[in-house]
Amino acid sequence: MKGHKKFLALSHVVLIIVAICSIVPFWLLLAASFTDEAYAIKNGYAFWPKELSLAAYEYLMSQWQMFGRGYAITIIVTVIGVILCLTVTMSFGYMISREGLPGGKIFNYMVIFTMLFNGGLVATYINYTQNFHIKDTLFALIIPNLVTNAFYIFMTKNFFKGNIPEEIIEAARIDGCSEIGIFFQIVLKLSKPMVATLALLSGVMYWNDWQNGMYYLDDVNMFGIQNILNAINTNAQYLRMLGRGADMPTETVRMAAAAIGILPILLIYPFFQEYFVKGMTMGGVKE
Amino acid sequence: MKKNRQWKKWIPIYILGLPGILYLLINNYMPLYGLLIAFKDYNYSLGVWKSPFVGFQNFEYLFKTKDAWVITRNTIGYNLLFILLNTVIGVALAIFLNEVRKKVSKKIYQTAILLPYLMSMVVVSYLAYIFLGDRTGMINHLLTSLGLPPVKFYMTKTYWPLILTFVNEWRNIGYGTIIFLASIVGISESYYEAAELDGATKWQQIKLITVPLLKPTVIMLVTLSMGNIFRSDFGLFYQVPRNQGMLFSVTNTIDTYVYRALLQSGDISLSSAAAFYQSAVCFITIIIFNNIIKKYSKENALF
Image 1 (cartoon, rainbow over the protein chains, first blue to last red):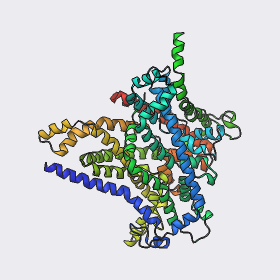
Image 2 (spheres, rainbow over the protein chains, first blue to last red):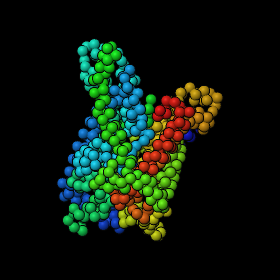
Image 3 (tube, helix red, strand yellow):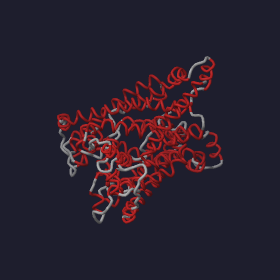
Image 4 (cartoon, each protein chain N blue to C red):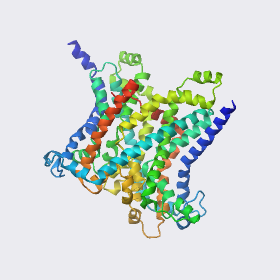
């Protein structure tokens, strides 16, 4: 028994250290964004900034057009993206979940093949820019990520198979409900945990996406929040181009911008943690 | 006649699946013809079909460069290291987390450890910069205050294998931990109760019950990752080193190379050859490792 207590104590020590390591950088980011620029350059960022300053946030406010638009674009893309992702993934998942569907196997393999082989960035890029001309449109931010993880299709398929009994579908059909009506009015209503999980996973994915913006957007006015952050990060001149002078606190402004970018996730995540965990543990299983 | 009616009854279901079918065709199947670019002297105005065919010339061009070896080595090398660490640390943390019985503390640990996984790599790059930056970085100010010379991290190759490994573990370990934890939770309590009666110590229980019963999950996850050994996390290798040219020999992977050749230096012959090379070797490794999974557990194999 004594050994057990020791092991439990060891577990707590290790987990506390790992948990602190996971959180500390976020605290530092917040602290850095409130630090006085000159002080930060002289003394480096610290856990507890000695000279507080709101200059970085004041600067962001003065550039509210860029950041506000970025935020708005990210929100629009996330909302539309999640809705489309749910519709496409779940309705396809529902189709392949139905027993006895002629051609069901073919559709199954159609998904599996995408996991085995893909054209890669060049082929995808050429397809989207030359055939669909999505450069500098909102489509560029929504479409390429729609079904990023083919496992999600199987996740919904397995959920429907395991949780929606044939009898319910049969009963609804006898009541005169159409097949499409059954899916939207009955199956989806019974799949709320699945809908929530998938919505959160794809919502975070859309909120965090910067790659499609980097591939397909030249127009800086189309940038969402992540692409603004990316531009500030990789192009030292980007902020200066917009700013009015050398007095701008370049270092701390970056931190403030990043802090604003992660705020929604930090606010939402703790309350929905279980859904994320559920989705992730289910996500990697085909059958 | 009867068969025809049977088929008709499924039409609404096919309609439901149609958006998904169209999407897969557009996003996953249509680009496949673009793989031809690797065998062509591609010209944007001529398009894929009309550009002149050049055989394996693009590949010769690619494999004559030193880069081909460097990006392959980096992609495989980092992946092997990440797979090893993700497994070892993930299993260890999952075992520790499983010991914690109090629901509240368990939830707090889990929430904290998983948080970095939800951040975009752009943000992760900002977080790394707080520590590594030249002017404001915490590590450099610590070094100077100790009387040591500062390090220009974004210009010094030596540290990057360590930095990238650390950042990767920091960001992804929460994911590995919850996957392994889900599988530990599934182990029947009765094994531990029996071991307890026989007077087994905690360490013996872990060694003789938990780890052996985790083996199938570990084998499956490692095999799945091995199948993707030619794919790298583009964000990690592009964002965290902030696209610094001086670091390329230790930070460039196939994915970052393809991106830079396509959209930064505009060399479509090199990028299409590298992308084709990646798709092809990936396909082979996935097939090989899928066959290995099939031997251990049929239900987890892709096909």
